[in-house]
Image (cartoon, rainbow over all chains, first blue to last red; front, side):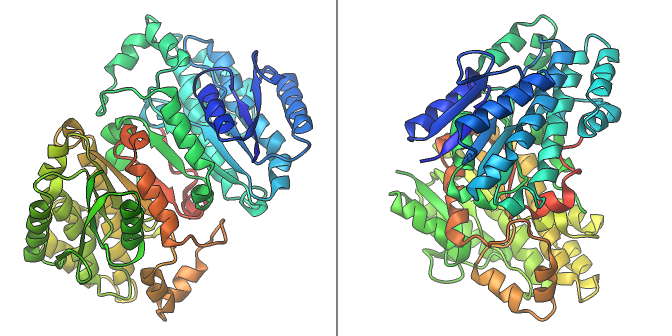
Length: 263
Length: 263
């Protein structure tokens, strides 16, 4: 069986993925602030470096796959969301890439979000700051957004940027050329502690409730973990840089005509 | 176990899907020109109506799902591609919708293609003619395209339009509101008789060989059938109107920055 790194392994979809992989006999090296083999804070450069070193050490330099599930959402502070969701995710993936390449056939799933396509008015300059690795600039930009929207802009912008980063990286020589498959799953609402905190928020709760949901029922974390498990399976070796929306039809309702579009 | 209709069931990914569903104990009502329970030609209005009537009759008015896999590719004639790939697919899905709704929890997979996003210069007026159900106009438009490109334009335009049709329908009341989940799988090259005919063509063979493939290996039809089977499983009830690219990274290589994009 394989060895997999999972960030955000202590709760929500990261924890559910951990349970499924362990039940299938795999070894999981969890990364989280607590209740994990590797306790590290992906909000800081030092924490990211510590996480990479500890995971690679524990894995003996070879990983069969990784799941990047760590993430914050409103009502967490916008700055904190930006640091963890984009810079923490990318630093972890880049740091683990040599260990993934060492296996020859690793598979990686990054958690994106349908917020990347359904959130109005994301500033282009924020997406650019994320993708150009200008962390101070990204934090400055979200701190200038109207306080009412700063957190969702930080969140959706980070999810859009990390998805784009993954699509660029996935098809490149260092990733696909090293036998690594990197894909993104983009959930909508999922019954997790993160969603429950959003729904309880007096600003963001009503915003979430107003989003049109073609599928009325909200999936649980294990349902998304089943998707991740499939995306780590042999059938998914032919998917590379794809974004898999599992979002109760919200993207289709709001953006049906926007993708696919002609080249 | 369930009852599933599969168009294009006699070869390629339709046949591979049939094999997997039957191995899992389901009943399959195949639709194809030959070697199928329902022999019908989806290129004509009469053939489409016959196919719907025969499938609904054989299913006793209730279907647990459907897979729309019938399709032609170059070197078939452009007009024939347009008629089968768009109008045949949509007529079949619309015709089967009441039987799908009757089950209360049906799941449907339409075969799209990564040609929808990687083919340059698709005429907007062709996509519009498809989506407006103007079959004569669509045929006229593809017949006016330079003969060198008519077939690929007919093909990619039909796949783009049927994908968009599915995304619009999937999130609507008659589909999602009837418990039906409709999603699209968008393969790239798959080792099927259809691909082998394209590769052997003196015009389209070299075009296909020139497409950049981040994943060097081509999947077989059964690999795509595993995706379809997953998209018909309970975990996929929370996907609705999604487009799942399983295309060896070609879309990511050519369109990484184009999707997701801000609302």
